[in-house]
Length: 617
Image 1 (spheres, rainbow, N blue to C red):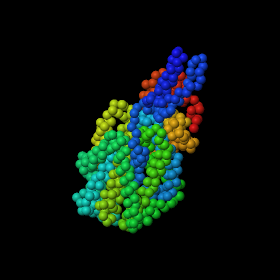
Image 2 (image 1 turned 135 degrees about the horizontal axis):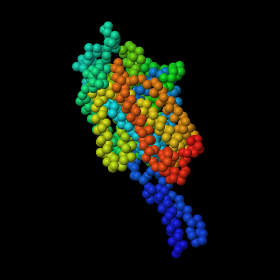
Image 3 (image 1 turned 90 degrees about the vertical axis):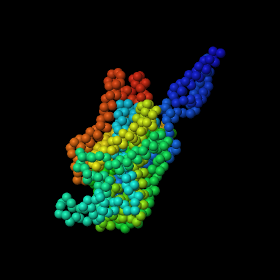
Image 4 (image 1 turned 180 degrees about the vertical axis):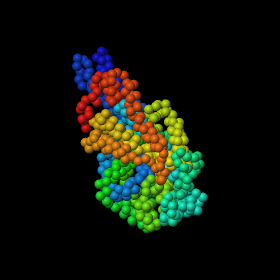
């Protein structure tokens, strides 16, 4: 009887230990009798269902389908910049030769960083701040990227509002940017790009109806003297902004269950429209010349540092790393999801979309150049000027121009809305994972975030709103993003350790990353990011909009915005270090050791204090 009680006690302790090691709920345990010694039965135990995640203490929703996740990531990464930025950079930097540095940086930095963020979020199953339990002192990196995502929302949603305004304006028999006979037009408006006969050197060229519609008809820029003369919000743009905010809220309020359904439209529609525009564009006169200019190869340009810098910066921004979005999205994956395959697929789709959109853009630019008998360089530009001036001007000359305009601006709307959803999800997931009160009231918190975004975005829809937009675009999402990604990869690859990170990935996918990926995370990607950060600071140029130069106080405000996000990293590190108990050595040990290993620190076992930890790859 006593032997039986002893056996039962041993079996109970084994089951208890198994549950303690995996506090996610009941697990089936197989007990195998090994031998009986002195009347005591010795047993061995095996978990029939191994743990899925080290962080399953909380119930976390997952994507309804794998396709929901892939479309969400693709929809976020493929945004307006793929249409208005990459093709112009390719044309500007030697055509096809630009693909050499672009693809090189994609392989050595873009894909590894993308893969790292997906794996980081999926393993830890938390947002951008919560994942830093792997290195508590760097939790400020998470708050930095959340803050940057919030800043981007202040001006990115305005682009979508512009597209919505243009969409509504396209439902007419004659597009409003076709001729110069409207109340907003100035005497300088001309239907041609011919030089003005005016002797005034400031009036060398006439302005086009499309340019005046954007700046005077939509923005009302002529009613502002500068950033210190904003004026009231324009009710038309403010109304469009309200619609954008409402759409964002009802796409995000229920989490990935709702956003995962919305992306089936917003992520796929742009490809349908791009294909339709390509079919139309290649049939236009001059399209071949435009495509030839886009693809012309000039390898001599590779000797210029600016080409490599443009490629490096484009890689960092086009994939959307460093914004916490990829971490947030992947945190809702199933623990055993193959994040490696997802990284390869989504980065490849993003690059192919950027490249193929160039054919669409330059077929129309070639048409415009031939129509106005000017070089392609005179009509080729990047940024909002391409999609709100040049492209609408080209569409206005086509048969059924209103139909093509509607199609084009629907594409812009869908391109922008899923990227905006990603940015908002980064903020929402990152904060509700940190504060359980917010987690219990996600719908209300989502409403607060989108309303705060709306209120601050109103500054960008005033008469001088384009100046606020330019300032935010220049400072809020520039060097600060690069700094955030640099600190992120250092924290994961050096403090947490590439070897430990690889073990985490093996636990999820069953396969350890190859030596190539580990070398990229440990050495190549950090060096690449450090280079880009230094270059972005060294080559900094103050923002400007056309001929308008921002005053010194505006530049100071811009740097304050940039510094406000970057400063969170050292401020939180100092706070964390001071709040931990013990001597300075013990504080440092707790600060750089993953929270799950703090018991080892109590025993004096600090992996980060050994040379082997820093040398392992």
